[in-house]
Amino acid sequence: MAEEIYKTVSHSKTTISELMIPAYANFGGKIHGGLLLSLMDKVAYACAAKHCSGYCVTVSIEGVEFLQPVEVGEMVTMFASVNYVGNSSMFIGIKVIAENFHTGTVKHTNTSYFTMVCKGDDGKPRKVPALILETREEVRRFLEAIKRKELRQSYKMELDNAKTNLAVDNELDKLLTERCKITAIL
Image (cartoon, rainbow, N blue to C red; front, side, top):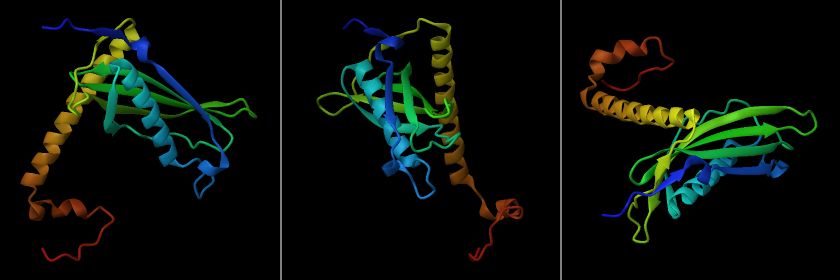
């Protein structure tokens, strides 16, 4: 049996910065959220690939909240680190900061969590190195990722159960305070 391989969190920490140009703006003049997601996916891939020394794919994205808009002319910096490892999966935490050179302001615009899976040459999931936790913050993030994983599984089970057992006739009163109009024949 092969000996377990360990790597530190700091080994694969990745930072990507990019200047936001007018071509990146949406119809409202702010930087398009899809562009920011693409950059987050890029930094998550770089971080995960460095940790596992291989090809990775994005499996899920959790917690994408656009806290503040990003403006044309700002420098966006994305910080990524491996917060948790499973067998073939890694939870990558990403923090996004935007800096305005003219005003000197720095703002936190996004935090997100990407689940990446390492793939072998055969295209099947491949075991990733275990994680060495060197700081209290790294331990906290690892434990928080376990909690996120548990909550995601619990939420999925609850939602699956609701879909299976939802009795529409018994739940209609919940729609009375919602902004909808029922035209379906029930």
